[in-house]
Length: 120
Image (cartoon, rainbow, N blue to C red):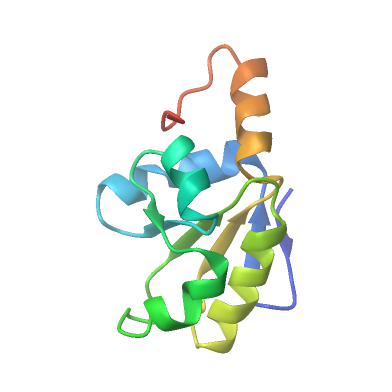
């Protein structure tokens, strides 16, 4: 179930988030991993760019505010903080992976037929 927060961001469960991942490969949206550089190096979603939550303001200044953004972290907390910052900067199409990469891994583990970007 999609939940719209007060930040213009939508929290999406893993299956819905995965359905939007095809847009990343087509260049229709940007996948942002807001975890630390160390966490990103250890494990990430294919196609993601790493912009730690504490660096978000200084790192997306030149990006088109209409660009759809898919944002994730480990458990969902940092991605919500990042979405709030992005919304204050004028981004208006932000989707957050509810439960973070941990929820995605659990979903992929439970769904034998699930397809999506590899977590590596």
